Length: 387
Image (cartoon, rainbow, N blue to C red; front, top):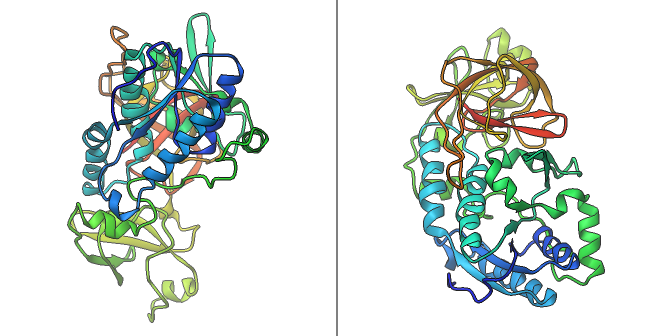
């Protein structure tokens, strides 16, 4: 795929992924009479010949949509940037025993940085993607809003965007329900109208996660233990497990004369904690076990969409995982260093910062490496990485 283009005059460049959401994004912009072009971002080079990441199929679908809509189209290979800025971090987090969210980092580092810079260099005024979110401008301030479809809202994955990328981005399908998006695609005979939504991480695809990860990080088997230290099984590597995980533990019924075992007999097992020093996976029985719940957390790498941190303590709503209902919380400072933003270039520059988040009610499986994202009503305020 070439980085050369013959459409420098296009005012809007759409990131066309080969899915229905970005297809309808291009359709809606075209219907508005805007000068639209599209590019396909290839972000992964490894294992293409094994068919795990359907990049070629997605590229063909995107190319077909562009032809149907009669808009200029080409592909761009951002795989080196993705490897350096997303995948390397992904591996380092798993190595440290955390569970990262590469989609959030991909948005920050690739789609709304590398792709945005590339599109503007081609003469575009703005970019557009198929994310279910909205941007609102008021008195020169840009707000990131939830998508109208509560089931598909993707603002959680976009909290790292600052004022500059928001000022240069359109989210047309953010105003629609998913059912409306598919209806429009079918009505205008777009080939992707019934294409299944992609799930998971592209570079892993449909393959076994443990097998994929073992190609890059050495597995270190160890014991699964109860909070009391009783060995109940073996794990093949702490990196293969995330907090709150129920499936894949491989712990069947166990024989024990302890009162606890007798009480919990028949209850499912869950991952509760990781002990990196002892290489032990702490597991508990029953979803109501107190070790699965947290009343508070600390977060780092804070980012505020407005460019300014709120005066702390600050009460708002938050999510610790995608599609979780908003949870009432209070944000407090645990350091005197609060984020500042310098809008001297196209991107935000942030100082390290940390905060404490205390929830009104205990939260299930708060997972280090994932993100806590803050809201006031439909406005996404920002967020940070859970420590």
